[in-house]
Amino acid sequence: MPLLEIRNLKKIYRTPEGETLTVLDVPEFALEERQQLVLRGASGTGKTTFLNCIAGILRPDNGSVLLNGTDMAAASEGRRDQLRAQTIGYIFQTFNLLQGYTCLENVLLGMSFGRGANRAFARELLERVGLGDRLEYRPGQLSVGQQQRVALARAMAPNPRLLLLDEPFSNLDGELRRRLSAEVRDILKSRGISAMLVTHDQAEAFAVCDQVGVLKDGHLQ
Image (tube, rainbow, N blue to C red; front, side, top):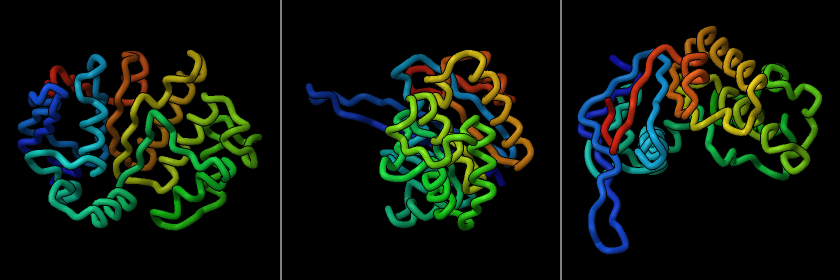
């Protein structure tokens, strides 16, 4: 059984004029255990909406999102939160770091939703993203690129079965992007984590993932 299986997924929005706009229409999709897929497509093609439906943050208007055999689309909000915490790591474009907590505490909090806090592993992740000397810094004391790296470490901290990455390196310069892409790929492979990566950068995509899917006008190709 695939880790993720999607059937007849549709997400529809209404425009201010009252018209309906289909932003997602995916009849069938599956992601296997240990599979890493990059999702490409122009802005506005539904990539982030697709990730949010997979994570249970958005409910689709039709279809099923089977995560490890459980339909996220049909589950209650509490059950979706539980499944997301147990199974998914998510790197958001907006980071969503807790401003009153240090880098290390943000990563440890990410672990608390999974198998429990592991301080040594949290430190290792922050060192691997180049922030070993910023453990006690708070997000407001970091650059945007450094905050993005904390978010990356936090998403991988619970050792999720599925990692969703929404433009995870967009605020980083070229050399750092290449180094972190290699680090993320190594962690995914060594820990057997499945992944879906949204990016506009083709080189970055192939540095992390093995396969490519394209979203165009809400359709997966």
